[in-house]
Image (cartoon, rainbow, N blue to C red; front, side):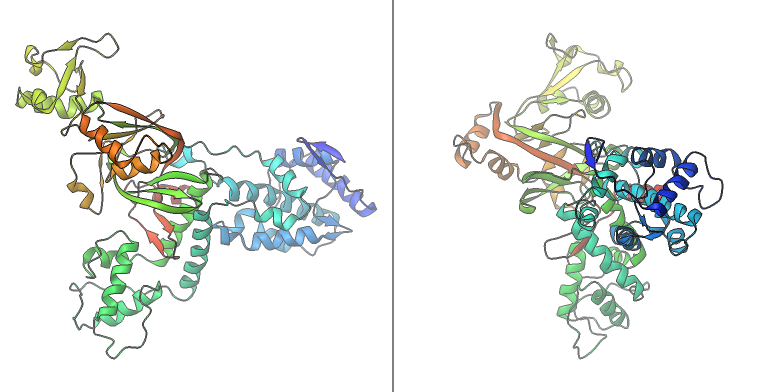
Length: 526
């Protein structure tokens, strides 16, 4: 046994053939090979891997690949299942050198397998890309993965195949996308789905030659299951319901009519949907492997908040998220307080760019909307009379004041604010402007998340505190006083951005890439 990275790892005594191979490995790792097949290897990391074990091979016994090598080759052949490319892990070179018996060949095969093993272990667990490479708005710190300890831990397991199977993310969201990837790749192999050419809107009762193509398109993703029909060109009730299912899965208005938006979504090729699934599998690799038995998740691409318990949603609410130019960041925190009747301390940029022009047009604007003006930020700030200020002297570049809005029906935060510590002044809150919740695309805020039914969320979060019932929550709101209700226990919250996911009934959902993040991930990944 040898102590390596804090682990007791067995060092198997090799026979003469394996010992000879160890000598070859020692020599090979002491210099940098220049041949094309040796060159891609990570020589410094391989040296660190082999030197503690006296260069004993891992994958070769008695001058041929051992059972563990066979299992590992099978894993590499199936790397596509995890959304990875087998050729990123030397699969072709491994296959070429699998049967050679010369020491040079065996040494190369050994090192190819190890290099692939280390690379794959990290990539499948934490992603080929780091968030900072492709998404400046991602602020959930991925778990650190030290490649060599991870490799040794996996190799030291009694059941190697099982240890390898635990490397990918364990979350149900990832596992469902992995199954969807296999399904969509099969669809691609079968020819994908037909394209709907330009044409009129199609709706229930219509008879049109494109309805036959539409029928095939709806069957491809199992939105339409009925295959026995009297007239393939008739848009019947079953097709209307199938179109609605398709529209729901794609975040479109579920009216059962194939208009321009629905037609465009149907004409996205299966290859693009496959890439979208792979991209979102990558995002799951950046999320914590253990998110908790109970937590709040806001998917800003779907404009929806869900309370999750034991991997199942128990509450679902529509939300409004940041505009494209003011994207809601991806972050993780702990919800701690529900605040009733909050004040709104207006960020300087919003005050200067939006409130100041309104005050300049109407000198009574601040007073009418419940805004108070302070000479500076800080506890010792002095309130000023808005009428005493010549607002025409100021613009977005020299605005010096702090603006605060009183609680009440006009307050931009509405009647409730949900507080969690973060570096971006982001929180969940109510809103007096409720009509926007009826829009399908709801990227309208400055970055914070507006909640459709904040009372339901408050009751869910405060459940367990006998002080807070629906009646006492209503009383707190009606009082007009600012009241902080501390949660019985901190509630984990994740603001994420997922443009593809699978629901409880195995329906794959896709959303518009409103923040244009998918394309950058795809470009960098390749």
